[in-house]
Length: 129
Length: 215
Image (cartoon, rainbow over all chains, first blue to last red):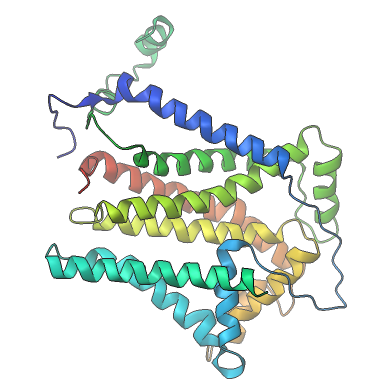
């Protein structure tokens, strides 16, 4: 597959290189702007005495929200079981879709389910802290 | 290729072994959505470079970590900028991995023979999240400390072996300098090395299997 050429193909060098360099430049530019406009805070020194529950970074909010749903003895369902099952389902997507229409739909359903799961659990703690 | 490049190439002989790579055909009308993975990789490179710079001034010890971050931010020339670049690259990296995943899914580019590459991609996401988790503790401030108390406590909820796992993650019963060094080691050595290996596999498969034609 990999190296076959087609009449309509472009070659990586130099046809695509310039477009790739433009994307790289834009990425670096955006990161610089964000870093200069929104510099990360230093926060303050640790106060070991009074317990404090900070909100995690946005990409861990979903786990943070799951913990709320499973208090006490059931905590491991939210902290370990559901995240592992979600990760396994995510990794398993190519094996659900076997190329048939039906299995393709099943894979789409699974991907949509995981996406909604992530988005809802991320948005809920933002709206109702 | 350019004159200077040719001069170096005659001595270094780069283009001959990589001819197939440099001259390989790429479908002429690729959507710009195919940039997402490349943008993520650009952010990885930025993270490695800014991380190497931060490591020159950062001190991974209980007594000095917070002070060293303070110094990087306030005294070191361009220190605050480098820290900002590192932090923003990390956040954008996760965002772009998710967008890239969405693109790959919609184009059904995980179908045979690309199943293994989907798995390699999933691993890069796990490694990125782990890097975000371990990196979060390093400034050794109020937020970092207590967030890590909460998140490492989660490990202890695992039935039967929870307490042992907690001890393993923290390097002791509490979060202290041992935990900090442990997280630092994972963040700057173990995880980036693993990331390098997985990304090599990821790109190798893209190269060998070619770019998926999409729908």
